[in-house]
Length: 127
Image 1 (cartoon, rainbow, N blue to C red):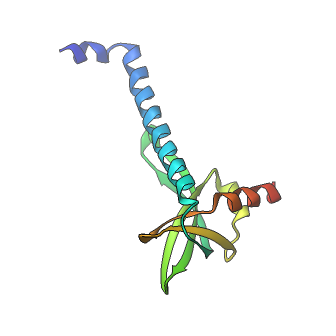
Image 2: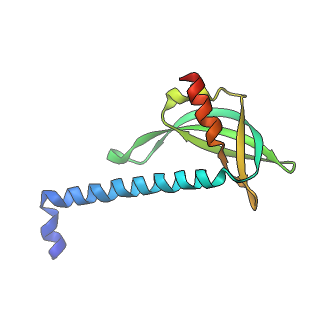
Image 3: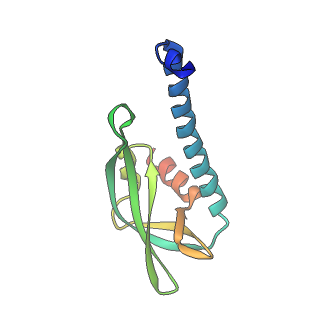
């Protein structure tokens, strides 16, 4: 019954929002740490296949996610990956067919991240 009484109070909603924001920041932090660690993995050339915006979540939690999708080849096998950018405006940094540097996990080539130094250089040149 304690929770029933809390639902009517305004601070309860702030706690729920804080938890949701914390979870989102946590997911972002994990993704950023993995991308940094991946920079020591083997690197191959990849190709930008397409860029698109997709909708994630529902209702108030709905947001647009802009992604650059790329393909790459390791030991004769083709793989694909996606890199989340800030907005659709960033697609200009990744024209279709352009070459990107891709780091792939040595034990599982299907796991990959773009080279962060190259991504920053693209943004600096275009910006």
